[in-house]
Each structure stands twice: as C-alpha cells, then as structure tokens.
Length: 126
Image (cartoon, one colour):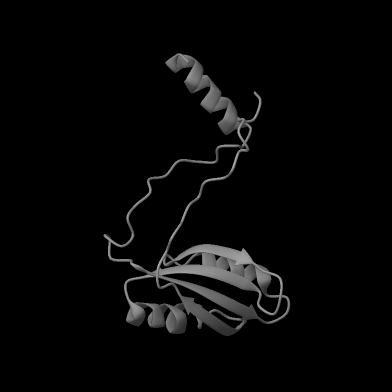
C-alpha cells in the first residue's frame, strides 16, 4: 500500500474508535519496576465508582478491573520491590475511603504480557 493510503486507513480506524491511541512499550524491569502484584480490593457497598477512580489515579496501578465474586476490583500494581509494594498497599490503596480489605498475589515469573487483541485474521472493514 502507498504511504498515503496507509495513513488514511489508520485515520479511519482512529475515527471509528478501533485505534484508541499509541504508546511506547517500556521495559519496566530496566526502569526499576520489576515487581508485579495483583491486588484484589473489596469495598463497602455503593462505593465502586469512587474507589475505582481513586485506584486509577495511583501511578503504580497499571490496570483496574471490576470483578465478579467476593472482591470488587482487581488491580495490577508495578513496584520497585516488596518494600515499595508494602507502602503502596498500606499508604495508598489502604487509605482510600471505603476500601475494606485487600488480598495480594506477587508474580514470580511472567511468560506472556501483552496488550494485543486477536483479530481473527482480517482487519475491520473500512
């Protein structure tokens, strides 16, 4: 494809919302954030939006998901080490109003980490 046709196709995909942005993939370990932890967060009833917004505002939190089951949220946290993770859990997540409990699992080794979405072969039609 010609560069102009490729550029126009990208712009159409952006306008339709298929492409929501661009970002560099940084090596977190080399930048000093080698520890990954998943934190299940439980809240008081009716506090989902405020807690969700507070979690997303924390720079160490990379992802926030509302989950089904006993817990309310699952947050992916990046930290420098276990001492840093402890401070994030105690001082930042633990101090959010309406957070009642947290359960944390530390990742020992990662086999795959990706933001890619399967397209099943064909790209969306223009």
